[in-house]
Length: 376
Image (tube, rainbow, N blue to C red; front, side, top):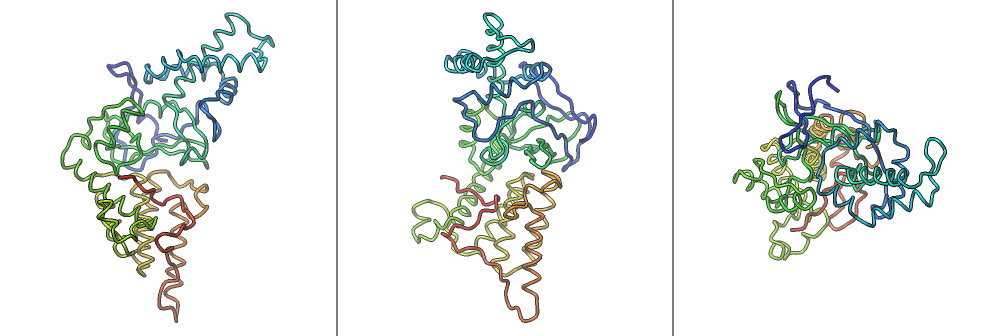
């Protein structure tokens, strides 16, 4: 992590944000931070047992650092007033016969203070924690720096949990000037209409965004086009576009061949690049271009997109990708596969690549990078 290139500054509304103090080049790792508190996968927000156990292990300095995080006060206050939360935490300390550092069972005001502290930390965790990996595969956690990153639909940074490092990494996705605020995309989905993003941001984070993607008519139109392409590709991958009436029913262009899929994926990649959206969604689109090129029997083009994916992946998450080896999830492992296919296809006596994508409608082995169908 570069030293002295970012700082946390207070904002006029009482919140805090992260700003660059020096020029940060695209691809720079801005931070790699460990969790302040982390819950295992499958932890139920209705059952606070796992959380209370995690809080018990925290030192006072960590608790203090957590309580200094500014977040949506309305969310924290509503949790403090929630009877279910209060009773769950109270029951935990009573039923587990919890003892303090002096080996005593807290009673009266000491117990009330302990319960209040845990509920306060839970409120902050509930408002600011993030899932680790797709679908919370590695659990959820709260981070000091990340909790202070603002949202933008035109982000200049990307965050990702790296289980190989056991840290949350934050990388610059654009060149950032000194004085610029560091922003990430909370939704993680650029292929949405302005209305879809606005609903998601307000419902989940209480945010009304006024970035260029939300106010510039040209960018808003471009995002709508990205959504259409994204849906068309998703429909092709899951086999929905086999239906001859698909386009008339769904209002989405019908893709019926790998050649058409490749052309549309390339269009989508160009729209990402035009808006300087150099995030993981572009990585996934490069992967799709590479896959479709292989299916079309164009291994050279497949190699080109595999290299582009690898270059971008390094800028987004670094080179510590041992955790992405399974099912060729990581770009490095996919590139090796494409090289092998290309080598096989050029051997004497070979007339076509042996690699074939599963036909539409089948259920291929997931790579972790397949595009999820988006509802219209």
